[in-house]
Image (cartoon, rainbow over all chains, first blue to last red; front, side):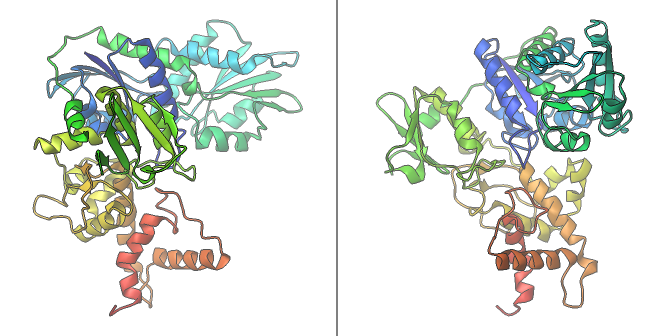
Length: 267
Length: 244
């Protein structure tokens, strides 16, 4: 049996963080591609530490619902799940560890779908249109911005926009400067984030003076999209990530569940 | 009571399948009934007041629903949303196979902003566990200890769901308590630390305003957080009222 385990960050304070993980899991479950689809979190339950106890399958693929390689994907997730590499044999299970989502080939497609959804039925000004991909970014880790540059480059190849720019919250080029300075009358700003949260709902709109999906400034119109990670197509990307990871390695013998005993004691 | 209780959920066998409802809804009428086990996620997501529930074993499961599911497998799916991993841990404990991880083992693998929990004193662990894990705030039965030689000094409860290891909420609270410990050298002439003064002032102000709005469940940085106040009851109240 095969199980897909999706790992989300989760939050002690709000439900926005775990919501897309649950929603993507539900979508993938409907396809019946995997025998089990299970969610787990760093800050919510079930914890990464205990999720494998709840899985019946013997061949497991762990996909982190994170945009880029970093502290969580390299340290926290392997440590909490007890993984020692791309493939770990433990307790009769084969556990495969997939990479983060942002570098995967389908990511640019999800970004473009999110952009289409945002722009559907909206009136643009005459003139140029820029797509701005917004990442968190950090000077501590180049992977965070690397994902943004990679996807911007891939999207440029489609020649759908007059220009494609990168912008960040915690490193240069800073989002406020990019949105104000990019040479275009229409600026489409898409947050390459996994979930809605403090940044997407509060800090970004406040810092940029956005009034909603469409903000008119004297010299330009700014279109602000929902985070890429909440788009329904992310479910396909997660499943494809797992499929890709399964292409290597063999299966191991299985373990059993424990519903029968609950049944007996409940009656 | 017929059936089996798991924390705030009562499970009963039907002619076919199983029924789950809130233990306080045993005799309630007009409950919303569903046969979809995955609706349990929606039920367990928010408190009655609409707040996020980061810890599903907190005694704040909302009422007003019934789940009637077809079989044991569906019941397991529903239970895993109401109390994640609880049924499997209950089973493993009965089999004598539940692996227990002590506070010190758990702390040893923490990193980043949580690394400092490694320096929390034994007394700090006891107090944090009493404030964060007793039945008033979490219905799991605490099985872990400070370390192999130091049992946890707390009322572990007698709930059905075993707690084999400090959870992420506890680690976050332990970090807060460690920060309190670091204030020891900053006690004023009255013997209060800066955060104790802040908490007392906030309490007085909130009570006097008539709007005693408590902080969210895991907002440990806020003076009016329930677990933080429980910790103050253990560590501050005896200093304010010596001899009681």
